[in-house]
Length: 307
Image (cartoon, rainbow, N blue to C red; front, side, top):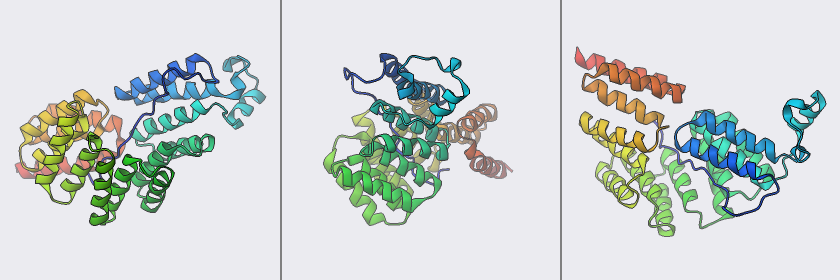
């Protein structure tokens, strides 16, 4: 039920103990936004990152409350370039939260703004590449991943992103070379094993995929995406009960995984647990309305098999 590899998205936290140009409250909103994102509360995360951006604006230094601004002040605020470098992180993370909601266009605008403030921000190129990838703009995605690697040739996750794009383009050899380079640079990074596992699963190497998911979980037993990937293998193998258990574990660790809700719904529907399946489908669509066609297709297929 997944036409593309799961994108790797990361919240970039501010370094602890670093004094900023902006008030301490910027860090508070930023950190709370990161916590909300981790809980799957993307709307709350976006709200907090937006507040961090506003507080970082050069127009906020006078301490005026936005509610008291004149129309001219409000217009000027909208045009203002944010000077505080910490705002770049807030834009980046708001873009990540928007991307998790499926709002790729708004996410790209945030990544553009992060790069406007901080042109050397490697993660912004990486995450914008992921947004282009999810939009189907493969050439643009590849250009951004390549840019992240030119800025930092030891940026292991950049090779993962490029490997995912190469899989999508049918360049299997190039993709697995990228995953190998990523593991050479970061041999204990569970995220790399997870992504290579996805690549192996989507290219028909279920045995290799399982080995990679298991290694990811050995390195990080709380890695929800790896449980999701293993669940997908079990679902494809007809083990609906085992798949549902893995999807449940994934959701206990990463509550915002829309695809985990959708595929757990499929696993439950296969078992005849229609009411529970419908609840999961509703939650999946709340998180990502773009899954509707895929869900409806799988439900129709299951109903056909029951006849």
